[in-house]
Length: 107
Image 1: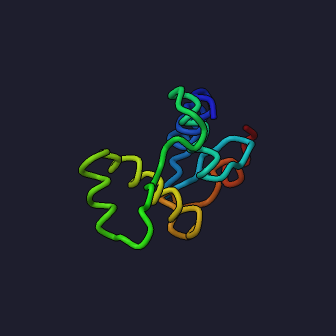
Image 2: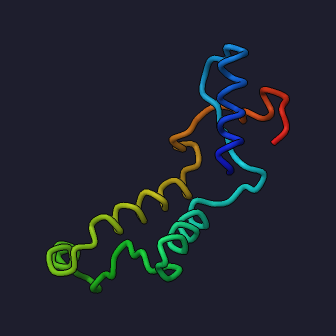
């Protein structure tokens, strides 16, 4: 989504005194996992290089050791968060109706 679209949406909402929460998004709907791939690409990381964890089979303790030795807490947390939202769309952190549909504006 381009910043000018967000600006236009905010300007319209303020002018019309629209209350509530709205989803402001672009034309193309992508999954949270595809969004993660776009972020990896923008950060010049390989696709899928952000790992949730590299489990050692049968050992829960392995996650603790892995965190200590490798330190991938931020990657693990991000991947688990993304997987949660992929599996539980109703928990999306941006509730509300689509702004463009509600306002009648086009993107």
